[in-house]
Length: 383
Image 1: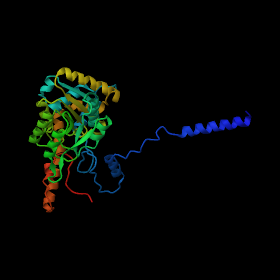
Image 2: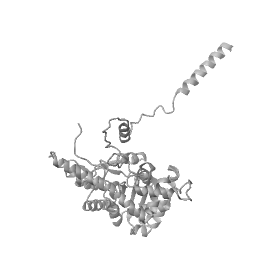
Image 3: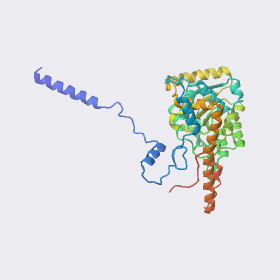
Image 4: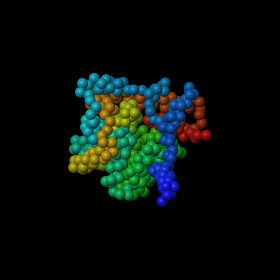
């Protein structure tokens, strides 16, 4: 082979290698659309209009449209800051034990039989999203294969994505009745009856997102009746305990009712709204099982799954919540802060309703005050 032939061969080889290196391993990755809510928030922040109003992401604001740090959170932060034993070591895999115990007590009640019988398992999570994800991941591995997760129509946008991402099929059950601007209880119960036995039913414990429509106690009882007959599994999402009505027990009534009736349940708790700890990502997944042995098995799998998912949860937000939940004086102050937030939202609903009536606005508007929490389906149509 002549020097010229060798040079041509080398050039050809380098050209082919260069071509191969220019190909991307990620060539087939599609471009995902931006998250609607967070994209709207970014657009809002970029808008320079001085009278802009953000009706998108669910976060409490003052009359001046500013974030509000709860006074009790400031006190807990000061206690934490002055703790001479404060360090930055890893938390246990399932989080702070006194935090998960207090979270279960908050949700199920201080006199909960399930807690007394040690039928409760729990893990600290990355807020409510992490709690729902951990629970869904657990169900994808240990719940009967092929079970469908039913979510309300409409529901929080993340519900479907979370279950789909762990391989669980998702279907809807009717919830919103546009004619009455309230709950479609007949459609809801009909869908529960029609669902395959042993389906996973995702339920909003209170302050339904995004409609603001909650079942009455009588309707919750009817829902539990059908679910018990059909052997469905309740998975509660509780992001607004105490934030909805200002009453912690009232806002967890649905969860406690199901537990009192003997259901095994999952409930995902978030402390983003009711503590104002949006960015600290503090939550808890609590499971109620049939007996102590089952609770231990479930707890062990929570730990195993958590280890491979996040290794262990972040400390700061959970430490603040842990301080408040386990101090009677601070707990009472927190309840007062909750009444401040929930009371303001209720007052805003009342003022809007009265203004609509005062202006003789066509239509019925009582649903504005019948709904609860920070979300509302007004019945208005966009143009």
